[in-house]
Length: 181
Image (cartoon, rainbow, N blue to C red; front, side, top):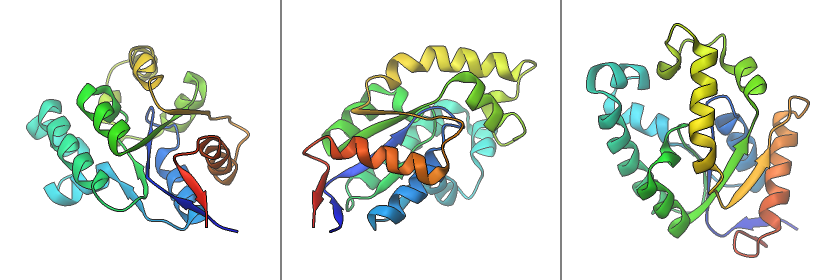
């Protein structure tokens, strides 16, 4: 008995929450495609996210992000990982709610910091105090992430597979997302 996805599941949350890793596992477990909005933007621009931020600025990046989200949400049901800032836009939240379901992978500051502190691919953390910056971003973004249709708590002891199963269990509690095929 296999579960079939009725609509696109959009993973939202902070950098380091596990959106890409958990999304990949989730797509495999559900037998659907996995897309990453940041990767789609990078492919279209032929530049990294950091290069886009540096050359064109965050507003330009956010506009491209909204365009890509609209295009991907118009496609067949899949697992869609978004950049940490994508869900901050009211327009994006509305679009995701209309065409799919948002799932906030909620992680606390310490877990996020453990996961991102050694990476230099995070343009928003290129500051004198990256952990303080991460804390400020989390404080600012958490109320918007809380508007997600489904919230699943990340835990340090969870493997990627465990987290994917937690997401499936949370999705199964809603009648509009999964059906048994």
